[in-house]
Image 1 (spheres, rainbow, N blue to C red):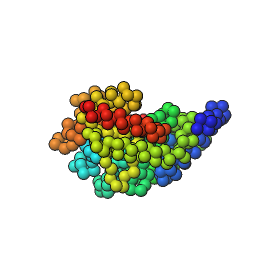
Image 2: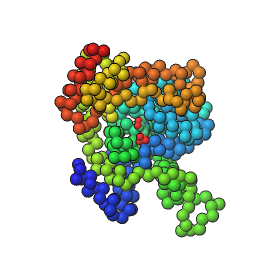
Image 3: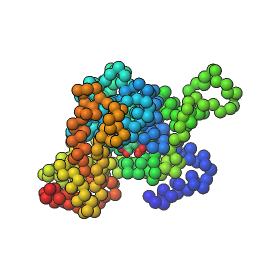
Image 4: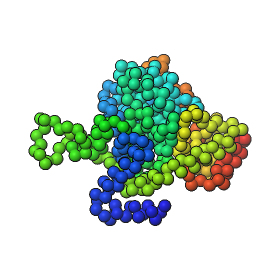
Length: 377
Ligand SMILES: Cc1ncc(COP(=O)(O)O)c(C=O)c1O
């Protein structure tokens, strides 16, 4: 795609700077259509996208948000940075996503939202969480950073959430060359706040009404909120826009590689992820689980395979949260000291590379090498 991509970047580099705005808007429209959402707002990163999604749902100081520790620091960071408290829920051993059966017990009078994470590209069961959230008046903010292209119950991810975020960081399923993300919603008010907060809080970008007490003459600029300057950069937007039409085909390749890996590991000591029948995951990488995590990881790398250990240790073990009480769960319930599945997964993950560019020979080499190594461990 080299020539095509360079041609798309040229007008942004050398033309009128407003080209960037047009390209970003084009990407937003195309992405919204791709995931079947009414609105999409392109922002500078998944981290800021999650934060803005929560802010747009009016999450703030004193609120609690139920999420998982089996994720990236961005997940809990976005909640804390709103002034809210992340309440940690354990995950399922099968597909590594939030265990819906444990969520209700974590709901308190302060709970305002649930933030499920589609880790590794595996859809969390957001459809099951929806009636629970509705019963308790909670928002669902879906962290689909790693899952662009995945579907659940026949629908693109985000369909059962109030707002969802998809990251365009380089190693995500739809990557840019730098940072970026898309935040999608069907809700007018959430969309309005996302626009406002991602663009300085400027009155031009949202339909929010001006306050009658504001002293701004007609024709002068006005600010409705203290916002951030974090729209997606035009160069990244142009690149992602060129890649977007290939997403379906690339997702199928990722799924085919994952199927080959699953079959390859069938008779080994490695556990492979298991999915609900409705779940159509994508695979940012293929997370197998083994007891000899470090040994297998380094032996694979020695053999030229770009294995990594993602999401270990889990978030609640990080220095930033150590003893701080800032990630929390009620005593006796799943939480920072009571996340047995999360802790077990983190001790076992070895992530194998899955990219559409991998050849069948490379996938076979990965399977045969890993199988041989596992026999000796
Ligand atoms: C699960 C998850 N959520 C959020 C993020 C943040 O996305 P970004 O890197 O675009 O800020 C990441 C990044 O790796 C992630 O893995």
